[in-house]
Image 1 (cartoon, rainbow, N blue to C red):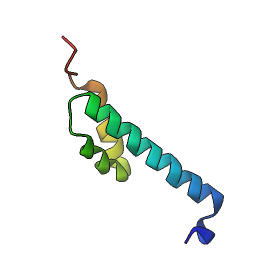
Image 2: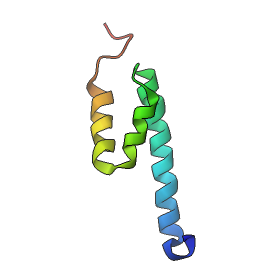
Image 3: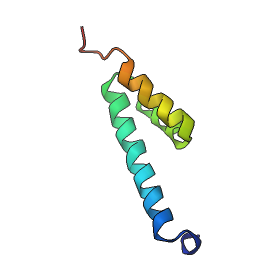
Image 4: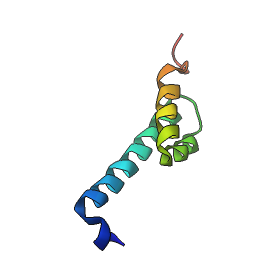
Length: 62
């Protein structure tokens, strides 16, 4: 499978996995369940989760 993707495809997968991991940590810090980051496997939902995390009220924010 990787033979057909080449280096750009492999880099895309690695970057996407790192973004999912970062979104997991961000959601966990904001008080949301980290597993919601798995919705980030779908591009539209990924950007929706980023907006959700950016504009929700964080636990220590008064």
